[in-house]
Amino acid sequence: MSEQPKAAPSATRRSEASRRAILTAAFDLVGEVGYAKLTIEAIAARAGVGKQTIYRWWPSKGAVLVDAVLMLSEDRETRTAALPDTDDLARDLKTALRATVAELNDPRYDQPLRALNTEIAHDPQLAATYRERLHEPMQEIKRQRLRKAWKAGQLDTDIDLDVAIDLLWGPLLNRWLLRTGPLTEEYADRIVDTALGGLNPRSWLLPGRL
Amino acid sequence: MSEQPKAAPSATRRSEASRRAILTAAFDLVGEVGYAKLTIEAIAARAGVGKQTIYRWWPSKGAVLVDAVLMLSEDRETRTAALPDTDDLARDLKTALRATVAELNDPRYDQPLRALNTEIAHDPQLAATYRERLHEPMQEIKRQRLRKAWKAGQLDTDIDLDVAIDLLWGPLLNRWLLRTGPLTEEYADRIVDTALGGLNPRSWLLPGRL
Image (cartoon, rainbow over all chains, first blue to last red; front, side, top):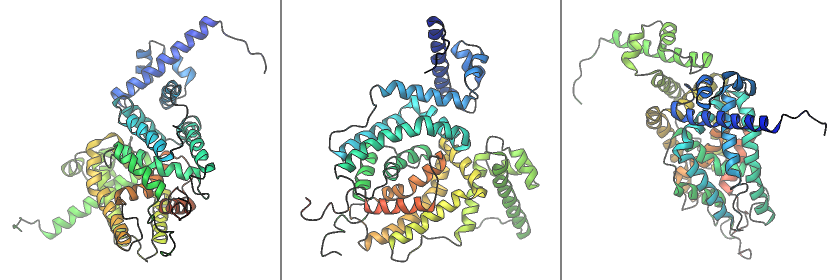
């Protein structure tokens, strides 16, 4: 590794404090006023920094928001770096999906996460940032749990792990975002049972039925 | 039925022509400028009507857009009122999901449908309108096909049809909206096969394995 000139420790600390203040302000504000009315000016005022400080570090309010959600998920990742792993795959997936349900139903996260999701829908550049920095790391955490189950013979040998993840989490995200039904723990459990067992009759492969 | 005073036929025709012109203009414009920059003024100008005509019939640009997408789906429903029904459930579902993929990938629909979806995400009132007028009728068409398969013993007896539909279409909508991967026919086929067969090993229930 090449030597880089380093800022004095106190300057680094100040920078990090400003960064966290900006991201916290962005997260709080988008929950209060919505993404459309979120401005760099308002974030700067709330965080107690100059607008130029924000523009120096981020190209757009969308980029600030991705980092705000990322900071949140990093702070929480100290608790939840991996999916539950008790050797009972169905139970672990239900625990994981119920955690997603709780997060999406949490009023503190609802508006910021909606804003992030809808910005992604309209902004391919932001979508690429989101995919690389938030989606893919979460996807890998899920893959790890499923890969373990697959190795233990608990998943069909032909399974595409990414399709499996989409089958489990896609319905939750979709129901939450489009408000097409209540997002409950019972729904999460049902998704897990249905995805694991499949829509075909469970006795489909029993001799005599074929 | 009670008698209602009727407009003269020519006035009714003019009204209907204006209505279609407004909805077509809204649909085209949202594809050109995006939902954020869509205005009632611009729709009126494009449709060749006064702003007041639009405000008389719709409370907001979001409501106009719902009706625009509804008009489109009604125009197309003359072709596709039901899901394919060939007694081969897997094939029929693949045909249906491939049609959804084609629609979502169609540049004419991409922007208007994204705008509708993201407005729904932020507007519970619009979400209720969407649910009642667009989502629920489509859901019932899908339910009918699955109900028939269920009666024919092609689906597990315990299946919740709405959960089954979410498992099939949720991943598609989610991948499209959040741009988390390529939306291809192969992906659609894979979703159908995985949802029907389930994530568990296919030989799970064979005697000797239990």
